Length: 118
Image (cartoon, rainbow, N blue to C red; front, side, top):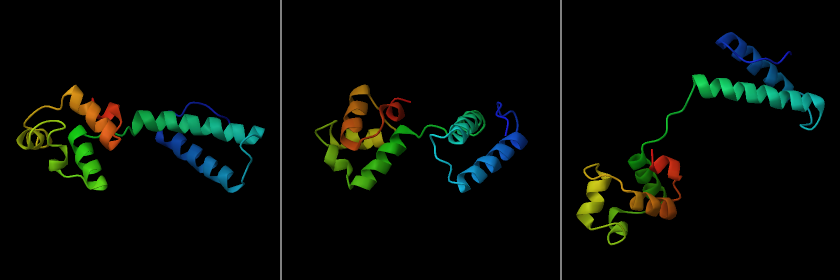
């Protein structure tokens, strides 16, 4: 396969099919053929990033999801970011998420800063 930028869905589908076939051959990644597959994957990723971009998650939804995963309740953050009513107001979008709160949730819940600051 001749590698070139992917410009449309047909080229994308052809590249995906070719890469899939190469994976089935179990080519060593450090071989010349393996390096060609790696370059093809970069071309595929570039096309997908442009045409199938995944929007950043909502910061409050990310906080709620991580709280549920880790078993935290609103009350667990009382005194750490504010009163019970303030925590509730932030998580119900009545008050804004501040930089200090974003830092806190980043440390406590492991949410990437880029998600919290979007």
